[in-house]
Amino acid sequence: MKNKLIEILGKYTLEDIIELEQNDRQFIAIKNLWNKKYFLSLIITNALLSYQLSSSGEEYWEEFCQFASEYNFWIWFKLEVLKEFFEVFLMQSKWNKRLANMKKIRINKILKFIDKFQDNEAFYYENMTVFLEDLSITMSQKKTAKTLVFAVKMFSYGARVYFDKFIQVPYEVAMPLDSRILKITKIYNNFNLTPLDFWYQISQEVNIPCIHLDALLWTKCDDFICF
Image (cartoon, rainbow, N blue to C red):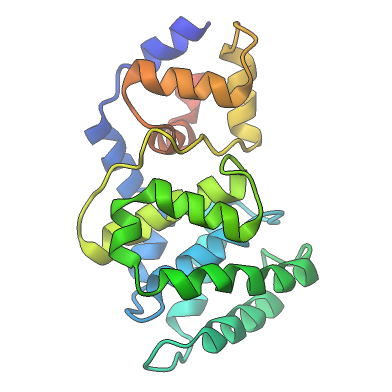
């Protein structure tokens, strides 16, 4: 079955996937949010709070970006303003109500990373493995944790818009193992590899990093017997 998956994935080039990503509703929502001082920090913080949602990711990111685009931020960047924004947003969000108190506590930890990130945005975009490493240390989570690698994905989306430049996400960044990806893994993993090792191997064989494969697997789900 693994060879069948490689055959299907082999139909797509990285350029095809970049086009799919730029038509992803999450990417479009981010593109429609434009706040130069807070833009990337908003995206990273929200990505790290995007779990246990009661909607699709697309619906949630559209809600978030709409709310943020209408919010009255200070002209200059302040961590206190970012914290206040997320406390207000989580109170009003339709789709991110679960574990709200835990998420409010998590914001404080995230802001420790944002404090360092704010003056190093271009560096982190050019060095996304360092971005993930520093995020892992600050958040006290493994670099393969789903929320962390998802944050890399959404940061790469935002930075592509912000810097008007595409940089490929490194091969070292793991696949975000959500329920849909795990279903696909179960169908095609006939070598008893761990899901992470399976996708690292697939990524190397098709020459496309896991994070970019994630976008393909989500948008072309029917191609992969995903049900």
